[in-house]
Image (cartoon, rainbow, N blue to C red):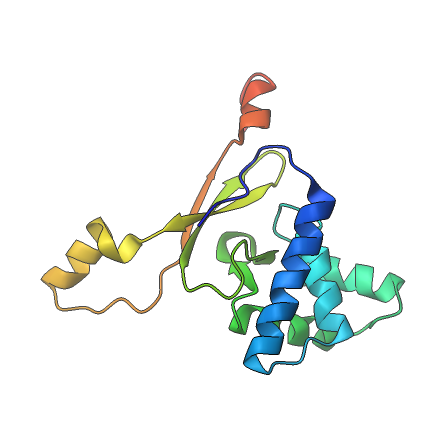
Length: 162
């Protein structure tokens, strides 16, 4: 499993590849990737940051694909439920999954200056958290790992602003 990271890359290529991966997974699972769901996925892939539902709704509204919050929330619910997007709890926002269709536990690295969000692989149930849970007989079913800091570009810009 590879991460996109904070490095520069062909963004057009990753958007197309991401949408194609979601479309392929939907077809294989018998899921319907409606035009609104597809467009929400494209919007999420267009940025490497988490986006709020209303920010996504503004884009859909401008494109004539929906003007009411339930439109975007239904699309986001579908994408999150099937592993094509994730909710970043810290930001109450959503980001496209780097590995749609793969079973994994993501960790989110959030730049507090530019808002970039990178999904990295994490296995907290196998580390210290897993050991603590084992000690008390607790079975971890889901974890949310989010870290806030500065991405390489923001770190290199100079003094750290609070």
